[in-house]
Image (cartoon, rainbow, N blue to C red; front, side, top):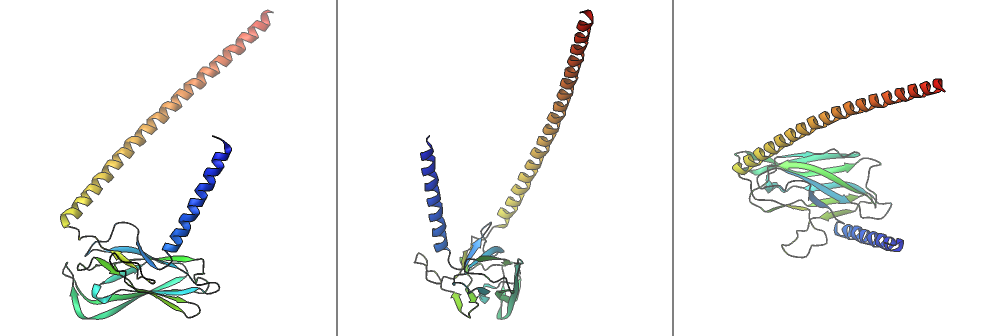
Length: 252
């Protein structure tokens, strides 16, 4: 294949890559809620990441991000992952009517907001984005999707609200609210089965790893033995050759 073909292929790949990046930038130019791992289930706990891009032009920066948790979700606890240069504050509110969860827990005080504030020098510039990770629960069982209206504050005082619901099968609004779909509630039997399968797989992997390690050690030892034998044979041949040379010189 000629060099020109390779050059053309490289140019095409670069073009596709740039187009993909541009498309991703346009599609993700708002606050989103992303699931990195198993899909959260109704009644369970969730671990999600809020991705926040800074959209204003320099020198305007993002200084604060607040995410609302609807009180009727009855989220009893939230944990935030530390973000260097940012402080997190969890707000809880007293519920007018307690919410009883499927596990019998009664929620009288629910999380209603989490706010991240940038320390001096850590604000998000126009070309920056940041991810804020949270884990929380228990999730509601009477909805298929949970929404988290977000509010992005800029250094010039402007506040952008990402709080518009996206209609089912409809076009995404200008300022969509971050949302996460919930999977069907896991049955206890399925959960135990998954745990058993995980334990079984882990055990099989451990046994395979041990067998592989033993084989590697055996082969390593055999290799050393063969090497030692070869070294001895080589040394013996060298000594015999020298003796033969010396003897030949003495007879001449």
